[in-house]
Image (cartoon, rainbow, N blue to C red):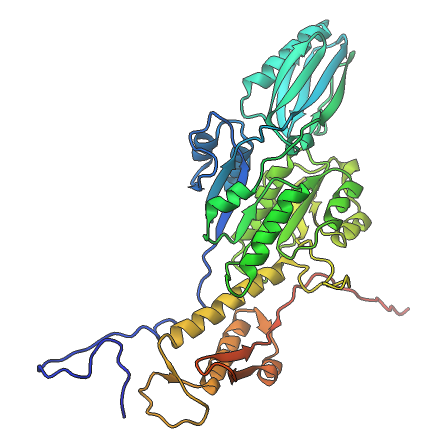
Length: 486
């Protein structure tokens, strides 16, 4: 019997005791998957990190120093870190598109207050308050509001007052700031002092997003399990989808899921969702939430990334820091169900006003023939598949790192580093049992029946396999009929 040593040669004549270590059987069970998040967004010139430089982010304060106070990317990272401070996070900043235009909006103040009070203005979900004295003029209040906006440099806009009109300008050029919500009063109990009136013109006119390709180029071959992008234009989404489709392929195997968000009506949201068909993209439906869409995307990604079990449903997980749409603006169950058929992930709001995940889906809707296909619908399926593939690769690479390959039935000593298709088959069955113990798959007998492991007919150094796990599902719907008796 001959033992296959890794480091001890066979031609030693000098006396001694030569003992090597072999860690190929050291690890038991399933390996852990290291998770990393990449956040892409726009920077301001006040930031200390240039565009296109991958930067590991440890805190909101570091993000502010790197990308500028009031920058889109800074807000995304602050929200992400507040929701998930544990998962490793990186960022790549983009400069504004020089050919773009910045979105603008207005708040017009009229009337004369007959009582003292407070003017509560929300800009991107951030409260700006101005004290109102009885008899104050509309022009003086407009000036005070503009000053208060400019005093808060974390806001996504700057302000200027002309007469009774406060003009708001986005800090960034591009389409994303068109979705910055501007409103007066939000929570119950907030009201405008009597005699005073306001009129809001929403943010519009922002054009030309940066090109996300610069960020894609910057990360090279580094794997990121989650990518957050604020951009929903077709060109940028197409590039992110193409990147992830390539990375999910068998020759790259660096899986990841992208998150973005869309604001507005159900019709506007589903119009976007219906144009996408990627198993690697999730679009959060923010509706008419005061919180910007780029913050929605960051928080949803953070919460998903924090979940340690890839197969456990995300439903009811809170999305901290997000403001819900006003009660009358929230989508009904029927509307949310329609959104889930048009590639838009949905949320609900609990009694305390906390936004909760209802169902995290991808935009995958039809197969190559245009037939409805739910196989890649849920993000839990995608996360589970990515992890299962990792465990297969780890098991084969760890157990058989430098083995010779022989046909089934070959006689060889037990100490030989030789593997056969049947040995690999047995190892895959053992791996499947680990999957079952971890709650990732079901149906052992079906797996053993359909598992195919064979030596390649064209390459004597290769083993081919069909691995057929029945991936675990998520308990989402319970239906019953109460057939009562009297």
